[in-house]
Amino acid sequence: MSSSKTPIRVAVTGAAGQIGYALLPRIANGDMFGSDQPVILQLIEIPNDKAMAALKGVAMELEDCAFPLLSDIVLTSDPKIGFKDAHWALLIGSKPRGPGMERNDLIRENGPIFTGQGRAIAEHGHSSVRVAVVGNPCNTNCLIAMHSAKGLPRERFSAMTRLDQNRAQAQLAARAKVPTTSVTNTLIWGNHSATQVPDYKNTRIGGKSAESVIGDLKWLQGEFFSTVQQRGAAIIQARGLSSAASAASALIDHVRDLVRPTPAGEWRSVCVSSDGSYGVPEGLISSFPVRADGKGGWSIVQGLDLDSFLKQRLQATVAELAKEREVVANLLS
Ligand code: NAD
Ligand code: LMR
Image (cartoon, rainbow, N blue to C red; front, side, top):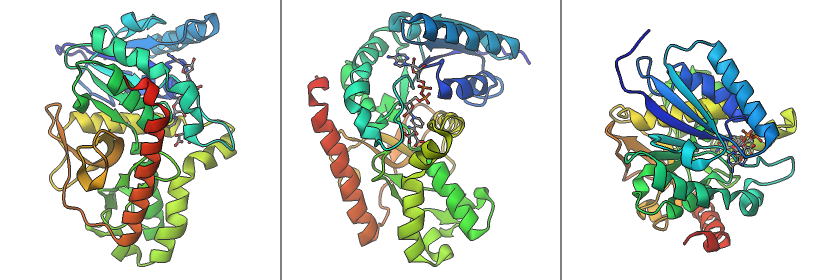
C-alpha cells in the first residue's frame, strides 16, 4: 500500500534492546499510527560498538520485512540526530531491573539519562513533539525529562501504565470468564511500581462495576491486587528477563490511544503530570483515567468515586512518587 501522507518521525531510544526488537516491526507495520501512515524510524543507542552493531542488525531485519509504510531508518548514538524533527520520542533506553530488585532501585543509574534526552528533545524535536517514557522507574524518569525539556508544555509528556492496565484487564476477564473485550475502562492509579492501584470499582465488566460482577472483594483486594502489582517481577522470575513483547504491545496501545479520540464514556490509564486531581500533588507524574481528544490534547476524567481501601492505596502510591521526586531533586532543575 502506498500513502500520500507525510511520514511521522518516531525516535526510539534503546532501540537495540528487547522491547525495541518487539516494538519496531509493529510501528513499521502501521499498528501505532494507522495502516495508511508512513513512518521514519530514528533509532538511538549508546555509543558503543556492540550496541551500534546490534542496532544495525535490527535495521537490516526491518529492511528485510519490506514494510510498505517504512519510509526511512536513521541509526545514531547522537541524541541531536536521533531526536531531530521527531514527532514522537519513545524513551525506552535504560537498564532493566533484575530478580529481587524494585523498579525504583534503578533511579540513580537511569534517572540521569533523561536529563540530556529531555534537553535534546526540546532543542531538536519537532515543534509538536510528544514524549512517552517506558524506561524504569518510568514515572520519575518522565518527570526528569519533562523538567529538562525547557519550553515544552507538560501535556506533551506521558509514562506508561498501559501494561498494568492490560494485565488487570486480562486477570478480570479470566476470573469473570468473559472475553477481554467485555472488560472496559480498566483503571490503574499512581506509580508503575508495586504500589500501583488497580481500581476494581471503576473498571467495568459488561458495562457494570467489576466489583459487582466479580462479587468477591477479598479476591479483588487480595490476589487480584497483588497479581497485577507483582506481574513484572513474576515475569522476570520466569524468563530471567523483564517483559518485552507485552511491554512493546502496551506501548503501541498507549501511543495509539493518545493519538486517536477516546470513545465516548471510556478512558485509558496514562501517567501524566498531575493538576492536583484526586489529591495527587501538582506536577507528579501519576497514572490517571485519561481521555484523548484526537487533536493532541487530553484530560483527566473527573468525579470517579473510590472506596476507603482504594483511597488509602492511592495515598500510599502517591507518597512513593513524592519520595522518588525527592531522590531526584538534583535532576529537576
Ligand atoms: P534492554 O536491556 O534489553 O534494552 C535497553 C537498551 O537501552 C539497550 O540496548 C541499551 O544499550 C540501551 N540504552 C541504555 N542507555 C541508553 C541511552 N542513554 N540512550 C539510548 N539507549 C540506551 O532492556 P528492555 O527490556 O528493552 O527494557 C528497557 C527499559 O524498559 C527498562 O528500564 C525496563 O525496566 C523498562 N520497562 C518498562 C515497562 C513499563 O511498563 N513501563 C515494561 C517493561 C520494561
Ligand atoms: C514490567 O512491568 O514488566 C516492567 O516494568 C519491567 C519490570 O521491571 O517489572
